[in-house]
Image (cartoon, one colour):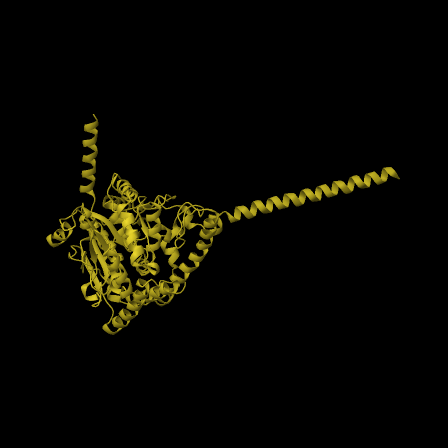
Length: 522
């Protein structure tokens, strides 16, 4: 009977797939680096599931060297005029250098979004592209929630959209229940287990971060004023609340447990692909070190381009103290000519990171702490040493340390001796490997893969005409209703009014009794 019921369910599922028409879906990618990688993967997953996918791509964004396959879905490229692009590239290069050299400050982030705001204004002025997108009549748009220009594009098109957050959800806490007593705010570098002073810090960070977000959003004010009529100009934070669904590039193998709304779906591990054999030259290098195994080093595409000579020297010296071989993603053209490479180190412009993380001889992953890299390490149960540089990387490493999967080192304090000791501690300490394997089990024991969750929920909202049934009414309430300020003021007024009335009545009674007493005495 159970077998018959299972076959019946499978039959209904297959029939539903056959009856479900392919939807026209637009994905937007105007940011480079890891954002490009994630949105490309999302686009490919949706295309492979049978949907007609079109991706809007800024042609000159920084695209990592890992791009090898030509996408099978349709891509609309756009770019700035050559003279404007050169100016933008020069300004972006300076900002990236500030970030990767450990000089990350808030004003640097504002400058970066200022550039994105200018880029957005140019894109919105491209009538040929905007008319093409309008004429395509897409059923749904899927966008990167940190790519604020995509929100303005969707508003122009008047289409429903799904938001993909490539970072942890603390960056968008205003769209989730956010109990500050145990949910760390982005930038606080706290865990969910806070003492009194931790809760004070988290509370103050909440207001600080809220103000910073407003300033970042304001970098798009010029684009909004230029391309939207007065009286219908959108507010970016309000546009984010219109998302049908939120996909988050993480899960509870890394994240702290917290309350979620029904339209929030974790898809951590989405970038994971079937493991392929590594090239023979890499296999030959690894085999030289026998049971000692090897260490994989990958600090992200942006950091790799802008690492200082001092950092490279300290890292190279530390690797030379390890018995393991070291495979390091580092461009040979950027390596200082006067620095001799350690004999156990091999540098390459590009390495098959996923395949190496799955290799049985890997002992450690040295990473910048980017969420995609952390997710891949968790997927294969590899302990980490993190060297976070900017953005969400320090926050990701806080979670890695809290889960006992690895440790973090500040770039400003990176010295060869302490770095080598830290790597040896993680490699030799069984607790790190054990915790990494425990996180791997949490990630992989989910009944559906991240790709299946992504496609399944997209199909759900396409079939049901949207996700209004999943979005809480709180998004339509003003803040004073959300936090019951009107109820509090009413009850406070009622209480004070009752107390005032009681005092007045008691005073009147007291005066009456006093007067009656005087009459009797006379």
